[in-house]
Structures are given as structure tokens and as C-alpha cells.
Length: 284
Image (cartoon, rainbow, N blue to C red):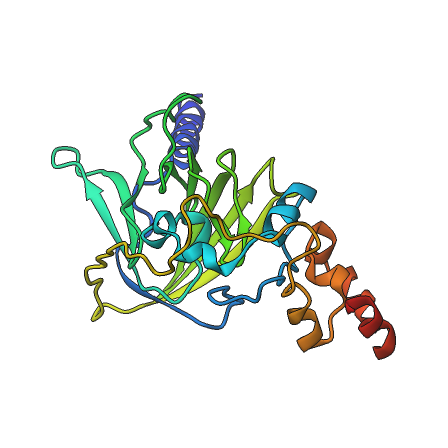
């Protein structure tokens, strides 16, 4: 009986160990360079909204966008937020370690044009709904096997794609880090009750590049265009002349390029099997 009890106690102990989240199962620290094989969106066309589950209000907001927004003093030095991390910028990841317990307190991620993005692992709660929102938001992290899961709230409004596709300040972000040797896969899942109708999942891959580093990224606001005070560049509904350019260049119907949840799935490709004259008629 005693050997059986000892065996059962040993199995219970092993089960308890397996249930405890492992500490520092993967080391993500270092310099990383983006791999340009993914469908990154650094320089999208105006009207290139396919694959984004835009809501009606999100689409109307995007269609009113003018590239001249970026010349406004309020926009010139805005840091890039975590909703828009897929691009040509290098990434630096570092870990913050408690000097006594030697456990990881937080991970920190920085790109060239961002502030510090801290992902806390010490169990601290997220702020209340009335706490201020910031460009980086507030993030907690936890291990899921060898993956790091990051949950981000309290984000300021920013953009998903640099052509007018914006997130709202009620959007939240769930991210996963997966490392395979010198390759880091970054998965992000955005949930936005105002501008999206479904979660939007995107990925980005980085390659370890220890010889690289992030330089300073100063920014000085200047008056790029002389315009009357209070003027905000925009287009009223139906008046944006550039929305059809992307579809015309690649012979895509407007119903595809305007985005929406349906354009995220393979079934959308069936709509591209129309005769060329039908496609042109839809675009015009």
C-alpha cells in the first residue's frame, strides 16, 4: 500500500509541476530585423482595404482620409503604436529582471519610431476603464507553453494601416511571440467594437540581427503646408477621387478593395473570376 501511495504522490507532484507556468522558457531578448516576406503594409494605396474586417463606420472613416493629414503638426511626431508594428523597422527586445528573485518582471519592445512597450509579467492588474490611454497602452504577459501571450488595453486611437484605416480607443490587442531558432514570429489579434466587425489577425516575422541597434529618432514639428487655422484635410462621402486607383491598377472589383469581413476568407477569390469587362464595370 505504501509504494502505491508513494507512486500516487509522485504522479501528483509531477502533475502539479506541469500545471505551473514555466519561467523564461524562451529568451526573446536581442535585436531583430523584419523579414519582408509577409504582406507588410508600410506603403499601402488609398482604398487598399481588402483583408480588413471593416465595419460600416470604420470604412466611412477610412474613405474620408487624406494623406495631407500627415502634414498636420498634431500628426507629424505621433509615435507608431502596437496596432501598426508590421513594417520595415528593426525591433529591440529586452527583459527586465528582478535583482532578488531573478525572475522576469517585464519584457520591453522598441522600434525606431515608438516609445517603450512594456509587457508586465508580475501579475499586476490592468487599470480601470477610466484610466488614461497611451500610445503603447497597458500590457500584461504570460507564458502559454513556449509562447508569450501579451494582452494590451488602454490604447489611444491609432492606425491599422497607414491609409486611413484607424483603430478606436476601445480596441484591444492580443499578441503572441513564437521563437524558432533565429526567427521570431509575431502574431497580433485586434478586437475593435467600433471599427471592426470581427477579430483581425496579422503576423510578422523577424530575424535575429545582433550586430544591429536602434539609433535615436528625434522629431521636430514644422509647418509643412500653409493652411488656414482649423482646416482638416478630408474628403466627404463619395468625393475621394483616389479610392478606385488600387482596384484599377490590379483589376480588382471595388467590392473587394473596400474590405469587410468577407474579404478575409478564400471565398472572396470567387468574385475575381468574373469576366474582365464585368470587373472594369464594377470598378468604374
